[in-house]
Amino acid sequence: MMKLIIGNKNYSSWSLRPWLLLTAHGIPFEEVRIPLKTEHTKASLMTWSDAGKVPVLHEDGLVVWDSLAICEYISERYLEGRGWPEDMQHRARARACAAEMHSGFAQLRESMTMNCRATGRRVDITPALQSEIDRIIQLWSGLRSEFAEKGPWLFGEFSIADCMYAPVVSRFRTYGVEVPQVCADYMAHVIASEAMALWLKQSGEEKETIPAYEVGLTPADE
Ligand SMILES: N[C@@H](CCC(=O)N[C@@H](CS)C(=O)NCC(=O)O)C(=O)O
Image 1 (tube, rainbow, N blue to C red):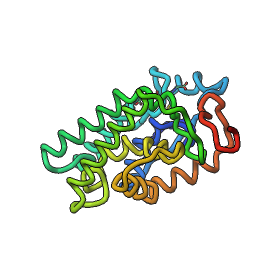
Image 2 (spheres, helix red, strand yellow):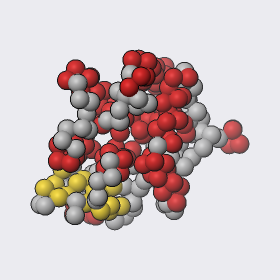
Image 3 (cartoon, helix red, strand yellow):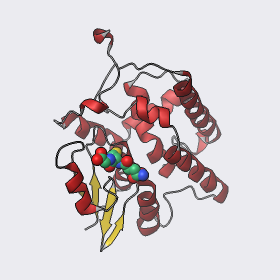
């Protein structure tokens, strides 16, 4: 059976993307979880991929070692391309959204590490971080207004674009980022969706804590 190697559910934003796509579509796979930042992590990761990172997909001798590439493979292999919107232009734009997430938002990644089970944290919002937040709000608001009648996801129907931004939904929730109602509604929909709710529940059940990824203060700490 296909295997998906992932990191801690609480912290591994890259792992969440393909896991969500597979789980939301009910595609069977075996999950192999490797806790990050332990003395054994690197050696364990290297047994699955020379890149030494998660996520990694293994199937019938094939190794795919990047979250977006894994999503593309799942879409082709199991979904007849339905990982992306059907319309060619919408598909091109969804790919641009995914690529923008994959290659950008460095401030967000660094100062708002994904930490699904944390609540009420606050981090310093620098101008550079605020401009990345603003860009995401612009993207989500525009898409949700345009595709409102087609369904509750970014492009109406669930797509890889939603998988790529699901970790941002978690971050915005954890760090209390203020968003317009249209984005709050989108975030609530993602969080309540069956697959994401399962990931969040399982994140909460994990026992490991990684100090480097525990960022932000709660009001009680201040
Ligand atoms: N481009 C890769 C990046 C993956 C990545 O950076 N994964 C991190 C964890 S979320 C990792 O495996 N780090 C290795 C480590 O912490 O030792 C992808 O999208 O899959």
